[in-house]
Amino acid sequence: MKTTPYIVVAAGLLALAGCKSTLTSWLRAEAVPLTDFVPHHEKLQRMPAACPFHWYWADLEALEAANLKHIYIAPVETGYLQKGSFWQEMAENIATAEEDLKDLAEYARLAYYKAFKSQEKAIGVTVVDSPDVPNTLVVESAIVAFAPTKSSLYAAGMVGDFFVPCLGIVTDAISSGTIAVETRARIGKDGPIVAILADTENDPDALFSLAKFSWTTPAKINLKRIAMQTASSCTVDKMEDLDRGYPIEFISTFSDSDLDNL
Image (tube, helix red, strand yellow):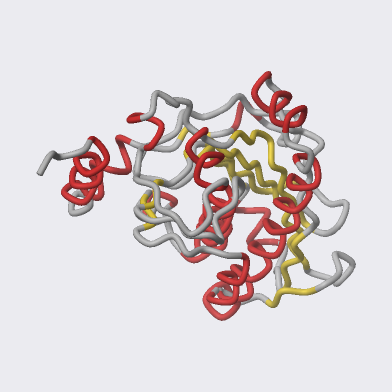
């Protein structure tokens, strides 16, 4: 039986799955330029590859002095989106592009909310629905870059069918999808910014993608991961201790209801 390129790629990724450090390094996205959404660019520390985030800064003394008891998750912004030529092409050729971007922002807000809710005991705070509650850390995030892979678009057009990992490589659709998120945390609704995180992630590869798959699914997978890692960052002594996770979804039957698992 003739071995297809798809089987070769799938077998290669399965073999690499046992070596997490190799996978995370190989598939690590390049950081996109920082935007004006986050201040203090000069204070940001570039994090090592093992850390889930590219950039980090925190005023630990201010955080300690604030006696924080609550966290509020603000709506996720899209006004800082770096609208390069690829996004413009998507907006021009996909009728629902702008609507899908708003959906991503709302999905991200809910992902952050549920991620912090799941870590309330570990962090020692309560997630609240208003930034006006005293002793509240307000978490504000923005999607600053978004572009799907061509393979994501291809898979989204297939109903109940399969696609293989790294489809872009084997079909000459090499462009890798990315999503970038910047997060800032401030003391109270109008207080000083005391922490900043920024991350850019490539679309994770999926061994199987079923009918639920849409062209925004890989971005949602990454948004869920970024939200969970942001919440977990409040529970570790060092950012380097955070687990980046595997960049592969082995069976992607992913849907928005997956947030219920947080």
